Length: 261
Image (cartoon, rainbow, N blue to C red; front, side, top):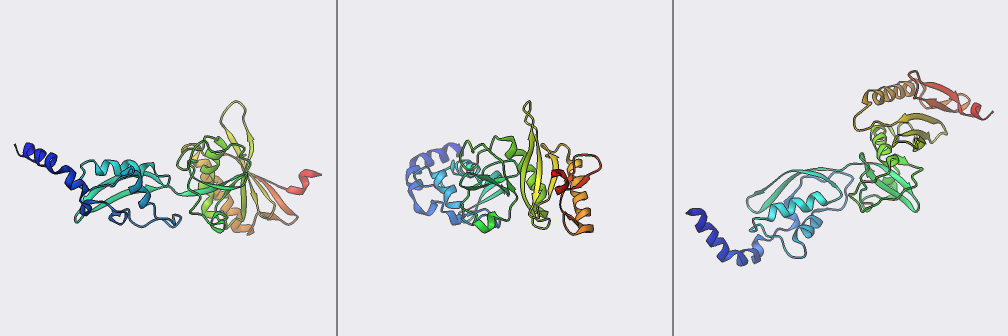
């Protein structure tokens, strides 16, 4: 009986409540916590705009939270929403996971940011100086097939971004310059990579970790690089740039200029 009465009251006053500006949700009332340092433009106005679909978003609307969550999860900076709830006096608290940039993909005309799964991210949040701090993936011939927030289908981007995520913490320290394809199998999606350093050395990395597989091999390669860097201070030999092959069980090191003799 109480439910029926409530439903009748809602149907009677619905239009007036939805039009009441006191219940209109504004960006400042959407609590998403602190923005990560790589996002400079507040995305909350875009959340509201997309959820309102040309109108307004009222907290009095029983469909408000569903519409808001749908809009937030469509945003290119958002990986997923884990929880959303209304709190007094008219605040919506959203717990979500942001996408994290790990690399810049070189394309004609500039650089495009991607996360560790190869999802294209908004470019507006990156100055040229900030973009230069990220691993750079070169040799990509394809173009994104969709807007920011869509998956870049090219395996070179997908697996290159996975590799970049592992290298990001040491990228500047090791003076790495770019990630490039070493070769790509014509019969599969497998890609092998090489890493160029600013000093001219080449690190033949091999295939990138695929969806958590071969994680042990990735960790061993990173450990070997750290031990070598700690001992030598760089990846340059006495006679100049090196070629370091991490694909064998025991890494192999050769002077780069010896390969051209």
